[in-house]
Length: 324
Image 1 (cartoon, rainbow, N blue to C red):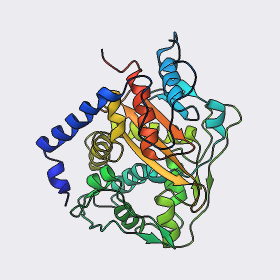
Image 2: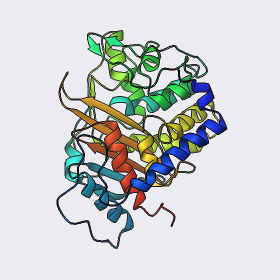
Image 3: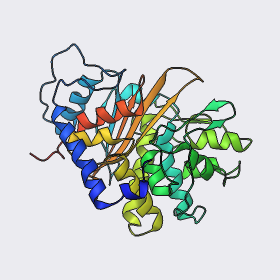
Image 4: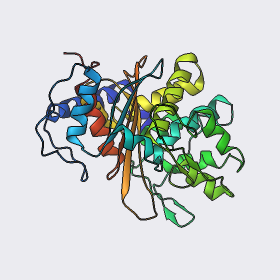
């Protein structure tokens, strides 16, 4: 059984981090990621660009030709670079677990959820006939930070149980998630269906039903989150979410993002447009992990969150943040 509290110890965290850094040697331009739905383009590697961020995006798109990628300046919200921007503006997809940090931050900030509360998970979860089993290793009861690191659906289903049917829309709207961003012409607007019962609240908070958003809206929402973390650095909500996102993108469910050689805090998400249909993947990140200067959004229309995290690693490996 994985002892998540032990995983948080300094020795275990350094060991986990070292394992990822050893694997980083395999991340070179032209390397094939492990995900089943992400492959190499048949075209030649991209030439360098005068714009370093756009050049980095070009390398990531070369790895995953269908990926929608958005890079925002964390302070101003200005778009620094994008891949397949028209598609990113029009794509509406369930956000999956990438929604969890936003709502966790809001609920802990409002005193609605005690982040020290531990919840046991046997990795089996069904909601309204849907199988939402957890993919994390066996674990002792987790607190909020650990549950975010390992993306525990059971934990966040319990969090969802504290919400009323009439308040989820307001919580999401506050992050900027449910409105146009102005980042691209002709962008679509999120589709949100107000839940009518507790199961629908749980499915919405887990990002698998009732809410579809664009990569632009997700980028704007994570920029909102980055601003909150910077404005309230010592609050319990900031501590929990910052720690969970940093660990998620280091040794947790989004650990593949660490292969880019840049410290990043982020979250993966996997969902499908239809029950039992083809999955799509997200990686939402802030880099560097301490005092982020950019927010990155990666959406892959066919694949998993881990695939999107590998694309993010390729982006970061060629970014201005990568130190020689």
